[in-house]
Amino acid sequence: MMGDTICALATSAGGAIGIIRVSGQNAIALTDIVFRPAGGKSLCKAEGYTIHYGEIIDKTSEVIDEVLVSVFRAPHSYTGEDSTEISCHGSRYILRQVLQTLIDRGCRQAQPGEYTQRAYLNGKMDLSQAEAVADLIAAGNRATHRLALGQLKGHFSEELARLREQLLKMTSLLELELDFSDQDVNFADRHELLELALTIDRRIVSLAHSFEAGNALKKGVPVAIVGKTNVGKSTLLNRLLHEERAIVSDIHGTTRDVIEDTVDIRGITFRFIDTAGIRHTVDRIEQLGIERTYRKLDEATIILWLFDEPPTTEEYDQMKVRTAGKKLIKVFNKVDLPRVTPSLPQDILLLSAKQGDGVAQLEEALCQAADIPEFNENDVVVTSARHYDALTHAHDALVRVIDSLEQDVSGDLLSEDLRQVLTYLANITGGVITTDEVLNSIFKNFCIGK
Image 1: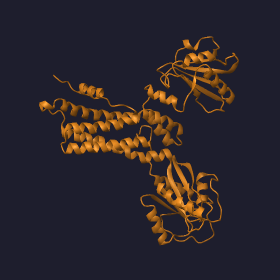
Image 2: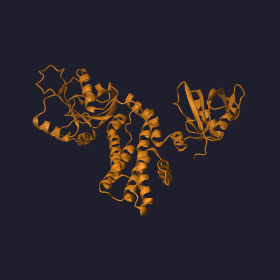
Image 3: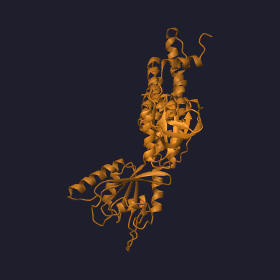
Image 4: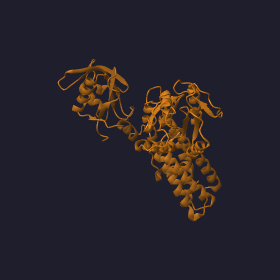
């Protein structure tokens, strides 16, 4: 509940320092009860953005730890509420005792994400920025860090606000016409509205298209390693991951299930999927693994086709059909073996997964196949499926608006579709489109009665 004062550990336990965050209407007063300041000054009299040294004491006045307490006063805090942060030693026992003492004095243990939820409810950030907090924490490479940081700073929100303002102007003009429909007055130039709608739609489509790259950066580009049994798929996976993740054996059919793991290559996260070897078998368990291999082929963006002898024309044709629409990288493995390497087309990479020869070239080919542009924190890139879904629905509604403008449909139908576009965009940031907002836009842009 928003009225409760909540507390929780804000850092990982077991480090040198631990920070406990307290937030709510009584955060400063409750912290003051358990805090004995070295200078004798009550926290209740402290100004915001100040740090105080002292001791945390339990109900029997026994000292738990020497601490520093930071004071933040509403609305100038992360949550927008009065808040304190208690910096103490990172002992699990100490942290547990401080938290329990706060709870005994009237605090409640915070729920997951509750601080950010309160920040959103108190207007410190919108929904897209709140989602960026989790993305920033989970960022595993430079690109995802930059995108999350840009979203947290509000770059995506600002982009949506500009689109929203243009759409509100269109809606205002159309609704103004409806108010004066009995006077046969036209406030909206249909040609200008059509050009504006097309411009807005192009930007919405561009944002939606950025989701493919954004999602790949966030979750990792899925790469399926496929091929016959015993061609070195598990050895290659281990080489790419720089660890013994998969069992390597000369026995055919060793990998019977899908093994997945991620690795960062030149700033791009790849999610490698080692699949069961494709071959005819009567082993039911191995057959299940092969069936999963085919399913993973559908999920992957890039296919690493590994072989240690030239594929037949039939195998080429089958792989071409199964990987249609995907990036296919063909790799000839085991070039370290003492044999004559057959003459192969230039688009086939030569590799020794066991020795590491050719791995650098393979990594370069993977980065090229991923085809992810370089991003900075000022770029607006969609990384959330929720945002992508909202943008897609907004585009569909805007297409109806464009069709209606081209067919000179009445303003009331146009206005309804425009409101749907506004609603979908507002859902991304958590805003609400109200009649008052439309009216305010009318009065802001026009002087009726002059």
